[in-house]
Every structure is written in C-alpha cells, then in structure tokens.
Image (cartoon, rainbow over all chains, first blue to last red; front, side, top):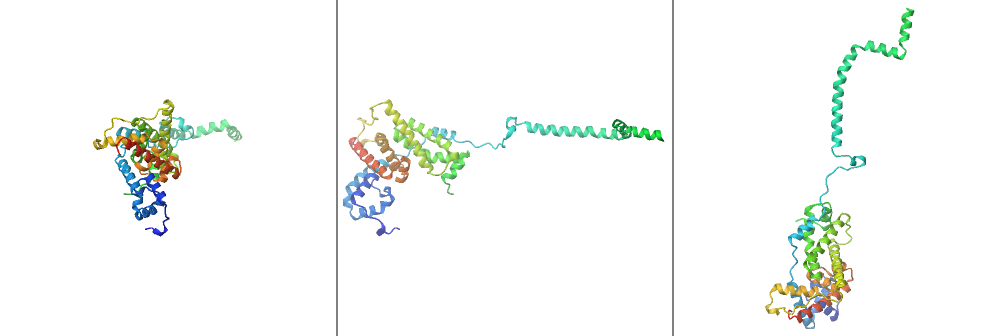
Length: 157
Length: 180
C-alpha cells in the first residue's frame, strides 16, 4: 500500500482533464496520477460530480460495444498464411544438392554389389593361380630379363 | 497453467509450430480486427487489414527482436494500414466526409442494444482518425496510455489530448442523435 503522503497533489483542473480524457473510472487514469486524483475526488466530491456523471454516461455507452469476434473464415485464412513447420531435411551442401535424392543410396548399393562380385571372382582365380605359380614366375622373370641369368647359370653347369 | 510469454510463442510460431501460431492468432486477431473495424467502419476492409497485418507478422517472426511488445508492433502495423486506406479514400473522394448521419435512427428508449452498438461504432468511425484510434485503443480495448501512445507513435500528452477531444465529439454526436 502506498503512503498517501508520498502521493503528489493534483490541481482540481488537472483532475477534470483526466476525467475528460479517460472517463469516470480512475483505473483508466495514468498510474502516476491515479492515487492523488482519487484522494482529491474523495475529499471534494461535489467539485467533480458533474464531470463524473457526464463521463460515466459515455463510459456506459462504450461498455456495451462488444469485443470483436473473428469469423472462422478469417481465422482459417490467418492460420493458413502462417509459417509452416520446417522439413527435417539433411543439410545440402556442395554438388550433392544438384544430384537426385536416390543417388547416394544407389551408389552404396552399387559398391556393395561390386565388392560381392569381386570377392566371388577373385577366390577361384587365386586358387587356380596357385597351381601355376612356377610357370607364371618363370614367364615373369624372363619378361623382366632375369631369365637370362638362369640360362647362363644352366649353361655354365 | 504455465506462463507462456509472447516471445516463447513467437519463437515457436517462427518454426512453424501450429499451436503457437493458433495462440498468436487467437490472442491478437480480435484486437487488430476491432481496431481496423472502428477505424474504417467497413468490415471487409477491416478483415483485409487484419490479413495483411498478420502476413507481415509472419514474415517478421524469424528475425523478431523484442524491442517492442509484439502486441504494440502488431497494432501499429494495423493502424498504419488503416491510415493508408483512409488516405486513399480521401484522395479518391476529395471533400467528402465519411457517412455518419442516419436521420432515421430510432430514439434511445426504443433502440435495441445492437442498434446502440451500431450507433456508437458509426460515431467512432466518423471521428478524425487519430481520435478514433486513441479512443479505440484506450476506451474499448483497454490498452494503457503508455501502450496506446507507443502504438500511435505519439507522446502520452498528445494521446490524452486526442482522447479528450474524441470523448467530447462522441458525446456531442450521440446527444445530437438522442442516443446518449
């Protein structure tokens, strides 16, 4: 509770101005002047009776104006124009954004298939090559020029 | 119920959270539509203003910085759109004032509530635009002086002057029509 002695006093003219502008209910007065105005109006009610009566009649008139109801069609329209939830898309950077969305999945599938085919083909090949290692080595050495050494050594023997 | 700030909702709405979007629409669209309706006196135009205001809000959400209250910003956008429409009206109809007189208006004791509401809405829409805005924001929508002054980009003293003149005009208009 505010100490009334701390509330500044208002002139009667100022109080009449407040009633003229804000109506009869002091709740509508500016907060800084409200308490002083109420105190003075209680001290000398007859000074303000006429002004309060006129203001009260207009206040009652204004009070019957109902709050505006927003029609459903307008509400729907306002909601429809509102921001939509953002998609939970992955960040698209670099060249990927220009490629179709199925491409990464296709690339992974191709890689897996390629690896499987590679394993299946390479296993029999390596078994077969093990049987011919000596012949293959001889051809390789000869191709590289080392075959001559063997021939020379054989000739020397 | 947990307190959810405007900023929380704005952040979530910017990410497309449908519940936050609904929250913002339900919280603020009545005020924006109400302001535009009182300013323009035309429901269809007021709905267009509301739509455009929210479109701008949705665009602003991702970079939103809470320097001003969202509500203040939103109402300011709506108000400026209304000012644009009113200016175009003046340019297209030079010298014409908004229609405000209805000689066939029924006397107050026979008026139904809806007719009284219509009468006051017509009277508000006929006020000079800044007076109508000040009255709507403070007297009808309950914005504080500080908020209303921010929305209207004016001083609190100027707002008070607008309010006083608006109420005087309204009283005179309604008395003339034997409504108040």
